[in-house]
Image (cartoon, rainbow, N blue to C red; front, side):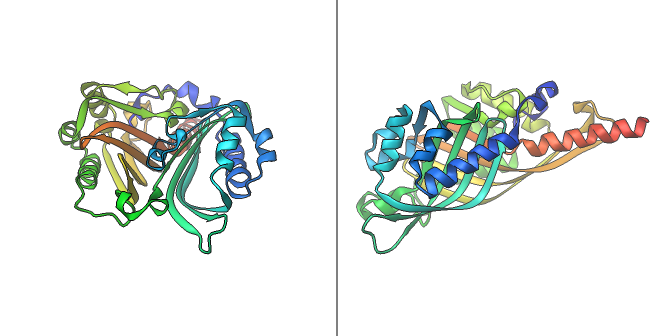
Length: 304
């Protein structure tokens, strides 16, 4: 969302969201749900990289990242699941990234009842194969009660929960000073899915992020973000919802006064000492691309 007004329009057609969606959905179905690891040989790159920062609560090396198809598949098989069922809340593709936000219902070997937990995964597709997998999960169901931190039914008075909710309220209100006050000086912002718009590089530094937010998000004529999904685990907070945006047509080279569109948006915050040290975003930027393309085509027809 922050990069919309900066997007080089000529790059928009160079990324095939439909191909990403096909591979992403196949991976989710065959590797996660069906546990078909033979199929994974065809769906994944040999140098596949898999990381789940929230897995630190489980004491897993996965929290630091694992590289190599063989090593990754061995890691996935070590989870000890007979099967899993994904329950999507939001799912979309943006350039080379396919994002799933929802929950995962798992049946562990020997368990009498399934366990359901909030879960998010993002897959990067390259040349028709998955090359990166990034997960975030609320793994409290697998932890003793004494070690649980901020699950979906968390203590809403926990400082981490309060700080995350305050940050997202400031985001919704476009209160840039309030957001800045809750971030560390060397905060990192990253929207990988903005590669769909010809952007996507990480930005480091609170001042740099504040300037970017004011120049992009602040330039929108209106911005409404409805959040209906959230979970907290360890140092992480995950939010998702729908953003409704109105941009000035003149800023996009359009004759029409406004360009309006809505899209899914997921935000992942990482905290240290109750300050945001990393702000990740994953957005369905295809909605913007389609709205802009439709507006340009309408303008061309009007000229004929």
